[in-house]
Image (cartoon, rainbow, N blue to C red):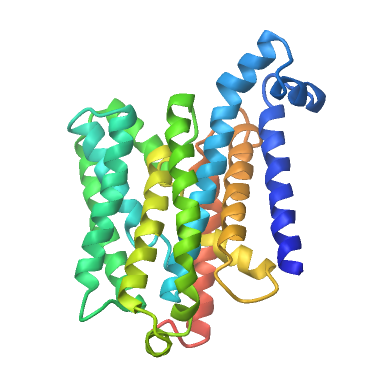
Length: 328
């Protein structure tokens, strides 16, 4: 009962954050006018502000946060490691490296740039999985290999940035931080389709998460095909992270913190995939609101705010792990 209440509460909070994002700005749209415009009424100016400027941005933030949140929950539950999220184990670094190569070397933009980012995430995941394979893949080894591959890719990105022209480097940097600026319907609609396909598929495949939480040997004893289950789950999680990164860049730490927050709210242990997705959406929407309106005259990319949230949590998690004797 409490689990349902938590999920509904998170959904209500996401709806409130979405309404705030649509209502507030240089032109304030009162809630009655907002609902009237969404229902087909309103004047031309209000429709332009909402449908051309704010809704694409807010909807992108909602879907990107949901994709990152669910992806992080799958990784952390599947590998039984709180550090196992796409932005920590190199998946987002693969997408970022491919996008930087695409924009700086090949001059890609739009759909081509998004496709390169998604392809980079998939290739990065395949490389990590192959390097971690030793008669199977264990969670601990995959995390360590992923952190190493991510470090190499980050160094490669830094190398490209130092050789780029100032204008190119500035454009790439905004994308690398993670930004929802200047989103359009042509960018939102493919994201809607991708998330509408991937999230139900992930929820379906995630039925194998319960045995994996008990450990590989126990899961095998219960009849689960551990490696195939892990490969399927990883494919869904990587696709979610890749799609989100392609749409808004590697928005830092959303996948990392969404699942732990959701699990703390839930009454029982478990993957909490849907609450994690809602938590991710809430984090991105609130962070983007803060980045736009609450940090002075300058509007910052949303990834700046999520980094401020996530970095202290990472340090706290590492310190806590060392205190309990698991830090090595």
